[in-house]
Image (tube, rainbow, N blue to C red; front, side, top):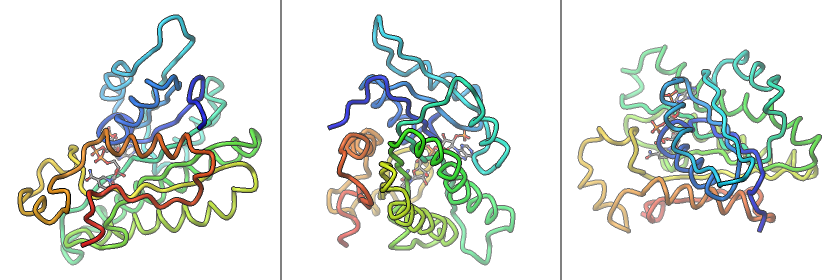
Length: 245
Ligand SMILES: NC(=O)c1ccc[n+]([C@@H]2O[C@H](COP(=O)([O-])OP(=O)(O)OC[C@H]3O[C@@H](n4cnc5c(N)ncnc54)[C@H](OP(=O)(O)O)[C@@H]3O)[C@@H](O)[C@H]2O)c1
């Protein structure tokens, strides 16, 4: 198992929900974390909630930008404080709640740009750093809807299917450089993204474990992927068994 002490982890979507839970767990394991999101204020309160070990040089950072923008990534990548990247978690995402024929062009563009293009930029910009280090770990966050589809979630499902395809292709491309690439496939998890969903009790009844998942449960799966040195090209469902139905 690889220790996270002194490792630098970048987490997009680290200001809230699943990304923040991953950052909290990684920081508790001794990692330095850089949290990425659009809102500086939310990022600051998130970063202040991260564990810092006493008498250790552990440092955390924030970077506020839209992951779908190429110049946001270029600025981040040139920041001299943030030169090493041991673990890259791509958890920034936006959801959809509309049939395709009712989804506006701007919503289609935003979902694809954030969930898929943002993840592509992130990997594209960090892989050369990891190649120089001859090591690194990429954890992309997809969704069960990528493989199962979802009513009112066509564009979201397409974006997440793209994230699965991206990650599996990267596993081919980067393994020889000592870089591991894996994808988490959560089912329904209690976060801001699901808080306004209708019919949660009916949904829970469909899930074999009878409930939505917790962010800490997803974070725990991310920690496994970060630490297990033979985990590569894993497509790891964390869905309470919903994928079996
Ligand atoms: N919750 C679920 O049931 C579930 C299930 C399967 C997969 N997922 C996936 O898991 C990931 C995390 O979801 P969550 O439930 O934790 O969502 P959440 O609570 O809504 O948090 C979304 C995060 O993404 C950031 N974000 C959104 N758009 C961004 C952009 N353009 N640039 C930079 N940051 C952006 C948000 O920060 P700002 O808004 O401040 O920018 C926030 O930190 C997403 O990729 C989601 O699709 C979630």
